[in-house]
Amino acid sequence: MSRRPVILVADDAEDMRNLFGVMLKKDYELKFAASGKETLAAADTEPLPDLILLDVQMPDMDGYEVCAQLKANPSLAQIPVIFVSARADAKDQAKGLLAGAVDYITKPISGPITLLRVRTQLALVDQRHALEEQIVQRTAELDETRLQLIRRLARAMEFREGGLTNRVLRVGQYVELLAQALGLKGKVCEVLSQAAPLYDIGKLGVPEHILRKSDALTDREWADMRKHPEVGARIIGEHKDPLLAQARVMALTHHERWDGSGYPAKLNGEAIPVPGRIMALADAFEAMTATQRYRSPVSTPEAAARIAAESGKQFDPRVVTAFQKAAQEFDEARKRFRDELEGIHDLDFSAASKPPAANAPPKKA
Image (tube, rainbow, N blue to C red; front, side):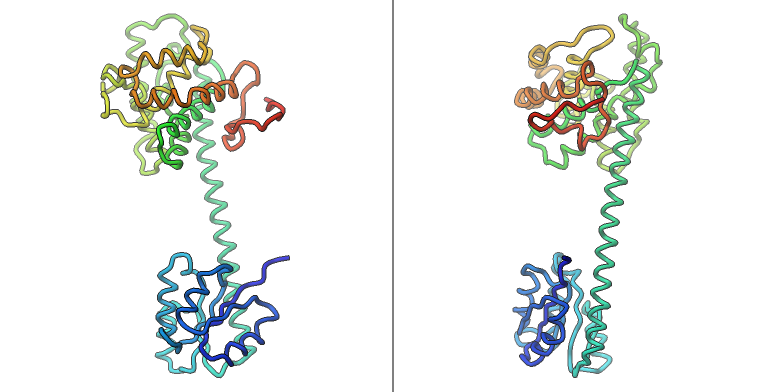
């Protein structure tokens, strides 16, 4: 059964409140107020009204002032107000509409006309709510499409390095875990995790034979490889959008080192943006614990020991401390998205990135 619309009737005259009560109670839930202060309190009390019938002349403050205060409150501003008044002058009606009312009914009121105007305004409210829901849904769909394009572009790059893995899922999880352990805000953690898959996109500019080479790289090949942070930053471009902006920062700075010996800009310490410091450790953990063409993976404890040894050299000591707090969760994410046993997960983070429920069967490839 759908909820009946709620109408707040605000009038200092008891006979008018009773008249509206008789007229409206069949189809609507009603709330009543006899003064300006009572109106403001009732309007801000659950259930919030869907429509307010507001008398102009009331004690303590008139209807115009009440309407102004309603419109100044973000949580109440969208509630339509219909003024009800014995003032029939066009100037009074214009004043009411300029105050923010959607309609103006003059006394003595006509029952059929009043009901028609109430229904019309409530129908407009329903239409607005439906449109707002469509906009929210469409925005969410567009956001998800953008995220999928980012993840699938990152995964497509893996073909050039030899095949598909769950690296995109793992690295996104590692970045989010580090950001959370550092105490960053929830939305920041989410954005960094979503941007993380693009951090190595610059390898699209590295010759394929270098990416697939299992032997040691020559000096010339290393020079080509070290261009990928700047190439990645150029591919992503400069954007006001937070997600792409952070993706560019991570792409450009994830090979900078805390001691200043990294590349491409030899930044050191606090000069390295925090997303780059986070990405540097997440990338190193991924490189150490995932199967590579040229070596076998190491265990999480071994990777943790190597990371600790690089605190203050390759890595920001605070990021290392955050990693140590989240090391067990890193290991769980690594196992959850391992490549060898469970195949390659789809890139739906909303499902794949969450730990499985207790006793839940493993996800099929």
